[in-house]
Image (cartoon, rainbow over all chains, first blue to last red; front, side, top):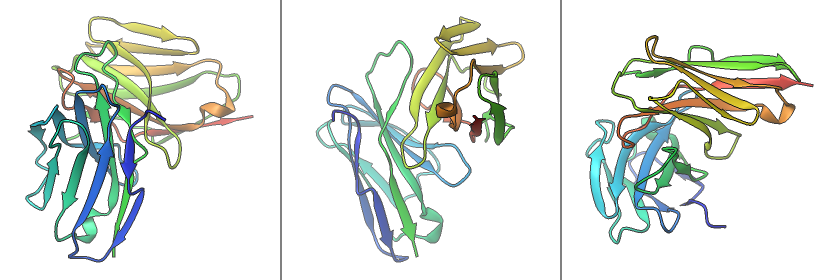
Length: 115
Length: 111
């Protein structure tokens, strides 16, 4: 399977703990995006990378959130001192730099539950 | 700020009939509009898109219409099939960077 892969698929943690999610994009895609989706809402943009450079960050990304893409391949999203409001599905997507359709290719998501 | 809005949370249609899903946007800088389909426990998958320089794009049973003056787009599915039952998200981007999504419309196609 050469699609976008996310791990873990589901994480349950206690409030105050740190969690890290990993995303492996489609190998030839230069762009990588992180989105957050809560119940009844569409995906909300968090941040995106062009290769290893983080080019844009949403104001939703508080200082407890950090994302990296050190070698321009896989990416990690870390949430420090988790809060119950962080409970959501975290979606990763990738795309080539130039796309005729503007399509993003999404992974299956990592669901975070903060108790 | 809800720049992309889907005002109908759900839609139910009979198999074989037309499904029409609507989407409104506020940002006139958007230059690409997309529809994604999402099944439970899966990520959204791309369905069809349209550039702001066009007013219609068709792909098989799926057609997207764009009305820039009204800042409105719609997705037509005809004929609707039970396998089309899913949540449909409208999305828009300016410069293919920060893509904004609507809240989704849950389509149910009844046999």
